[in-house]
Length: 408
Image 1 (tube, helix red, strand yellow):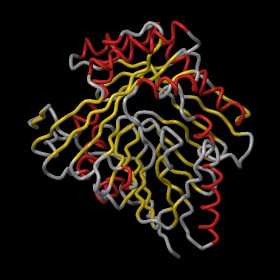
Image 2 (image 1 turned 135 degrees about the horizontal axis):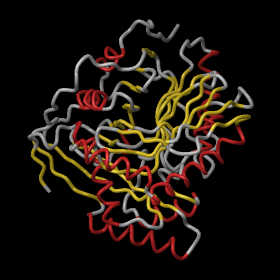
Image 3 (image 1 turned 60 degrees about the vertical axis):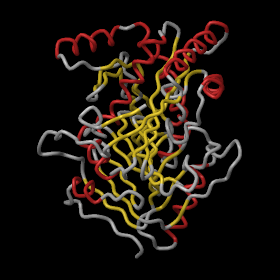
């Protein structure tokens, strides 16, 4: 056989410690941890406007071919971009190891900077982002656009190599209840000519969709507020988020779209009447766990992910209008940011997380991303502050603010 799987007793932390940037796929969820190595087969890119729609079919073909070739790991792993004009990066690995959820014996230690010094370039500059939010609000006042998610990026460069393996460990320790990932990307996507490997790395709080047998789960997040170091202030912020008309409206738009996308595939759907609160070390979110049962076992997790992608949580609503507004206002290509990352096996089971709280990295640089959902009632300064808070997931895992020198 050409592949191997791990014993169930293997500790998830062993898989985390075994990750090597440039040669591995790592994905940890609240229930399981996965480390894949090598490439047995690559899912081809078809190109064209319908490339995303045909992706599940192409993946199923590659997985069937792998099974017919006696490969004992018919699982596709990798990342799907925000825009279908960029190829999905999905492969069938040579080997895969699985374990339960990550559990750490001690609290996360203080992280030291991964490089001695960084230079940083925001794209767009804060003032330009504020103007972009105002532009989006004007579009909503004059047409049917209900929501658009506008993003920013930070380009950080270091003279010395950045330890991505340690960055992944830091992200996992700080966000054990989320979805921590690292995916090799094609070198040609590098922003700097001649750059080598590229890695998509992050810790997402948001499950796009999972499938286990006929059971389906989606957990959209929309409506956010920064956390406070003061416990009383932190709880006050959480309570205010729960009743915020602006954030509840933003959340309702997302839930409406997710249910609309899942309903054709499910014979039952359970949608809570009100959102709950979930938190990360840096943010509070409004959250709704949507569960259902599939009509047909041939519907794979990737088919569901493609049907839902992009949700209003990362794009906006209506989707086509929001996508067009993003293309007009945002001064950069998102690449795999706000896409989806995860896995799907030959039976159709799998997990796909929304690709947020992440960066695209090479040996000496990281390009961080953060966005905010703009709806009627949004205030540009508040949306800018939300993006700053979302950057903290990556910045704190990099050790910034704890001795690293950052220069404009």
